[in-house]
Each structure stands twice: as structure tokens, then as C-alpha cells.
Image 1 (spheres, rainbow, N blue to C red):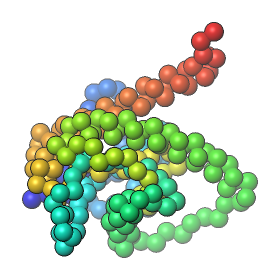
Image 2 (cartoon, one colour; image 1 turned 30 degrees about the vertical axis):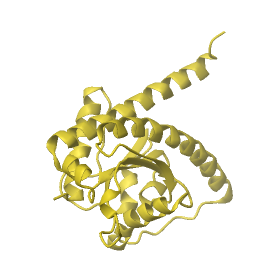
Image 3 (cartoon, rainbow, N blue to C red; image 1 turned 90 degrees about the horizontal axis):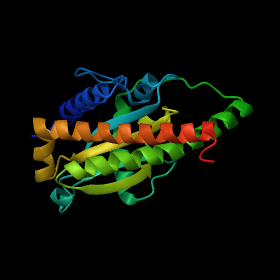
Image 4 (cartoon, helix red, strand yellow; image 1 turned 120 degrees about the horizontal axis):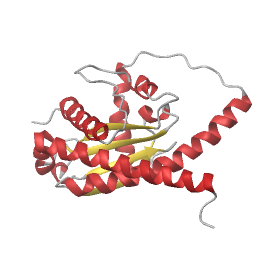
Length: 219
């Protein structure tokens, strides 16, 4: 039996362990069995935060024919509209948690502030795509279901990040092989380590890129 809240917390703790071993500071939205509103989760990623990773378990409605065949690791980054029917399905499923959230008043931005934020957001979006690619490569390599791909969709949990932000679907609870792997301690450790490896690979290439830019690159 795969309980998403337990699997995601266990995987997140493994991500933290693996990243902290590499000297990366990690702030978790939760470290115990508690519910954090979707709109509040990315608020943990403030000015001193470099990136935001939201970890989930995928599934398919068991009323759908062939539901048990869907499998694989997938990574999403933000888009105003989903790029595929599958992306729309996953976004709808993950955004469903909004019904448990308490409404939060949104501040109005002036026009200049909006433009500046939009420019910054576009840069973060490009970098989010790169981050998604690194994490996808590592995660798909360890999950029995393999590579379910990278896509874009409108995930509420990512809209407030204003940082490099991705949403990871670690596997399908409704698939027998994926489910066994997700529920196992060894599987959770492998997934957490893989996600951490993707994050570290991204940070290394980003630091190299910034260093080249500051230094003017090779003569």
C-alpha cells in the first residue's frame, strides 16, 4: 500500500540527507506528518533560497482502463497552460489540495514592479527547465518504470516560488512495480539520492556559468 504523504516525506528526508552531506543547506516545508497549504509551501523559499523542489507521487484513476500500466518518473516546471492532456491531468490532481487551503489576500503590484517581476520570472523559468532536466535524468535512472518525461503545467505550488522551481512525480502508486519501489525504504533512499544528485549537478553547472560570465569566459 502506497500512502503519498508518507512516501514523499521519506523521500524528502533522503534528499535532505544527501544534500547536506554535500554541504547544501536544506529547508523543508514539513518534517513531520502535517498539512501545509499549497500557497504557503513556496514561501519557505525566500531571498536566500536558490531553488524549490516539490515532491509528489503520481496515480491514475482506477476507473480508467489500463490504469495500472502508467509508470515512470517525471519532472514538471511551470507554465500558464499545460502542454499536454497528461500534464493537465497531473496539474488538476495536484492542485486539488487547494480546497483545503485558507484563502490569502494578494497584494496589488504597480506596473513597473510587475514588469520587473515578469522579467525575473522568465529567467527563473529558463533555469527551472535546466534543473528539471538534471533531476529527470537522475530520477528516471533509478525508478523501475523509467523515464516518463519532462513537461510543463500550471501547478499552484510552483506559482509562488519566484525561484527556480520544479515539481517531481516520483512514480505511479497505481503501478505495481513503481508502487513496490516507492513503498520500500531502499527505493525511497534511491529516489532521494537521485533527486539530490540532480540538484547538485544543476548547482555545479550554474556556478560554472556564473563564473564564466563574471570572468568573461575563455580568452
